Structures are given as C-alpha cells and as structure tokens.
Image (cartoon, rainbow, N blue to C red; front, side, top):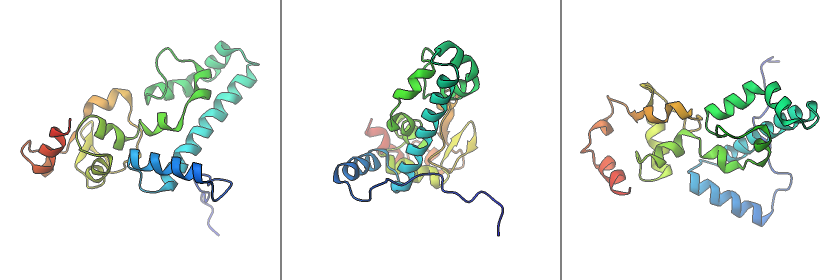
Amino acid sequence: MSTGKNTKGYETPNHPYQGERIAEESDLLSRYGLKNKEEFWRAQSELRNMRREARRLLGEAQGDVDAAQDAGAEFVARLRRIGILGDNDDISTVLSLDVTDLLERRLQTVVYRQGFASSTQQARQFIVHGHITVNGARVTRPSVKVDVDDEGAIDFDENSPLADDLHPERAESQEGN
C-alpha cells in the first residue's frame, strides 16, 4: 500500500442529474474554457474550503470580525495577494464569494482578459503549449492562480513563435480587443 495522499481534490455533486445545475455548470465551463467538470468542481471545493476556514476563524472569535481578521491574517493576506479579496475587504467577505471569483483569477482567464488570446480556449492552448510566461518563467498549467503583482508580468515566451507581433494567431487575438 502506498502512504501518499490519495484523496480527490474535489467533491462531485450529491445528485447526478439536476438539469438546472448541469446547465449552469456547462455555461461556466464554456465561459471560462475549462476542460471538464472536474476542473469546475475543484474550484468549487477550493471555494468551499476557503469559506469553511473563514467560518472557523469567525466562530473562534465569536463573531468579532477584527479578532478573526487578526487570527486569520495569513489567510486573508493570501486571498488579497491572489486578488480574490480587495484591500478593503475583511474576512466576512469570504462568505459571500462566488465560484466565478476564483475562476477569474486562473492564468487561463487572465491571459484571455489581457488580450493575449482571442478566446479562453485559445488562452488554454497557448499556456499548455508553453507560449506564456509569468515573471519570465514558463507556466504550463492553466489553473494557476495569478498574483495581483504578477498580472503585469505575463507575456509570450521569447522563444515562442507567438512572441513575433506579426504571427497570424497573435494578430487575430489583437483584433478581437
């Protein structure tokens, strides 16, 4: 038997067929260019864990937001660093977050929003094929959460054919904006 961590990083929905939920998931999958529902469920689980941590901190502080803020200073700082919370938001704001707040911080979405690609699917392909760098380091995982400080440091890899402004795919994505 292996001793490593062997659990899934997400939970599947409790009920297999709920037309409304499936339609909503499919809409978000296409809007954010996710490969499959597993990626969406992973984001939901990540959000669920964040909310759980915020509830725990608020519960230990018996509802005192300032005390909970102090106790969870690292937790809140991490959420601010990756842009999920604003500078003025406190720990209670975590409870009202939506899964789209997390999906907006994925490298794939940020690359698309900054106009490097003409669609989220194309952004995913550019990342997976190694055309995108963050702070000069090639990143090939579309699900990486982008720090607010690193947003300006996203660019095409200098060795990539897409680094040329005249590349057909790049010209196409620039026209779309």
